[in-house]
Image (cartoon, rainbow, N blue to C red; front, side, top):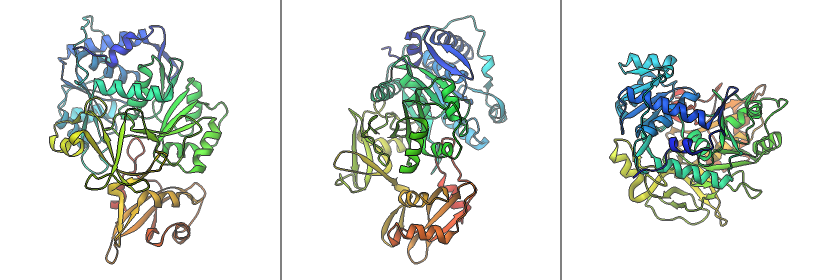
Length: 485
C-alpha cells in the first residue's frame, strides 16, 4: 500500500512556491521535484533498488535534499553521516549499513574510496534521461538510518520509517502553527535528526520553505537568517551561547520563534530573546524518539528551565530503575510510550538486542532523567550515566554545570565523575573561561560552595580552551575524562 513520502510531499506542493533558499539561490517546489526525479533516475542507473541503502556524506547543500528525497522515490533507505567522520567511523557505518553506494565529495570521498567503497560525486547524479516511477512503499517501510552521536559507545543506526517522518513533521507544524508563509533557517547539519525532523519535515507537510546555511556561524547567524527571510529557527544551547558571545550586527533576524534543546540560564535566554525579538521554545528529543516528546508552549507560559509538557497524543512516564512511576518532584527516567515505526523509531538497524533493551514493550527508554511539577512541566535532570555517585548521594552533573555556568567568568563548563578513594566518586568541573575573563579554581569552587549542598561542590576544577563536542554541540564527556586523567 502506497504512502506519502518526502518525495511525494515535494511533488504535491504548489509548484511555484519556494522550497529552499541556499547561498542566495532560490529553488521552487517545481524545480526541486525535477531535481528529485533526475537524481532518482541516476541512482537507479547505479543499481539502487527498493530497500537498498544509499549513503550520503555531504555538507549542507541542495544535493543532500536531492539524494534524501530520491531515495524515498525509489523505496531505498537514506544513510546520512557526518562528512568530517574519521576513517574508522566511516568503516563502522559502511560495515553496519552496507550501502550500495556512497554520495560524497572532498575529504569524505577520499576516505571512503580508501576503504574500497564505491563513491559517486553529487555532480554525477544528473543527466539520466530515463525517468523512474515511484516505488510503492508503506508507512512502516524504512526511509532512513540515522546514526546516534556515539558519545558513550559505537554509534547505533536508528531506523526511521516514512510514517515517522510524516508524524514528526505534523507534530512540530501543529505545535508551532507552521503555515506555507513560514521559512525555517537551518544552520545545524542536515545529516542530523534536528534539521530533518523539526525543520525540513514541518516545512514539507505545510508546503513551507527552508533556508540553509552551509555551516553554523556564531557571528553571522542573525544576519544570515535575516537575509533569507527566516521566520523560524532551530538551535542547541551551545550555539545560542556562542551567538551571544558576538556583538549584535545591523540587520539581524527577528524570527517569530526559535526552538532549542539543552539548558540555558535565565540570563542567556532573556538576552537572546531581547536581542532577536523572538520567543525561545525549549523542547526535548533524541533520534530515537523522533517526535519531540515534550515541548514548551509557544506562548508566554513557556519556562526557560523546563523541557516543556508532553505533546498532544504523546505519553511520557517518569520511572525508577524498576520501571515504577515516581512521584511529582522526584527524578525518574524518561520513558516514551509509542508505536515503533510510527510515533517512535522502529528500532536499531541489525541490533535486536539493543532494540529489545531500548524499545521493549513500546516503551522507549531514553536514559535521561527528569522531574515533573504539578502543572505537568518536565525539568531535565541529567543523563542517567552522568549522575555522579558521591558517598551514597546522587549528584546531577547538570545541576553543577548550571550553577558554575552562572559565574560571570565561565563561558561553558562540564562536570564529570573522577574516582575517589574515600567518597567513591568526586566531582570534577572542566571550565572554559569567557573571552577576556579570568578566574582561578578556588574562586569557582567557592562560587559553587555558596550555591550547592556540600556533597555537590566540585573537588577540582580543570581549565580547557574548549570542550570537545559532537557536530551538533553535544559534549563528549568520555573525551573530557580521558583528557584530565
